Amino acid sequence: MLNEIIKGISMTLSSTFGFEIFQNRVEQGFETPCFFISVLKPEASPLLGQRSMRRYALDVQYFPTETRKNDEMYQVADRLMESLEFIRLPEGDLLHGTHISYEVVDGVLHFFVIYTLSMYRPAESTYMETLETEVNTSEKNTMKGKVK
Image (cartoon, rainbow, N blue to C red; front, side, top):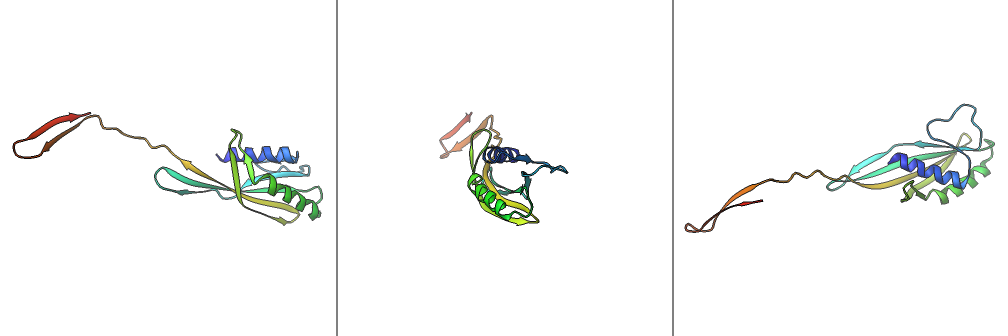
């Protein structure tokens, strides 16, 4: 599911900005402006039954044309807030981002967002084949039978 979220973010960034997007690592000598998507710390919390809650924290880094242009980074951050609040996954599902924030560190914009999903894992059910039971209601009436 994490790969689907990254693809959804990439599609949104590509349609909104049109800059190059890196996902695995930034190559040395890359051309700016560009984005780098990194996964911070995914977590899973069990819920009742076969359900769980998964939280995917991501850092979308923006490398501007000039490292000292904070105004450019703030404009991109505003556009990111609007465009990454809701992303469309490749299969068409809409996903809502929460805990959205950003900061500029060493000339790079770090845009943080968390996408939360409720997951359901179907349980394997084992059914009984035959059940034999004997029911006594009184000393005289005794019932025997099979239930399938």
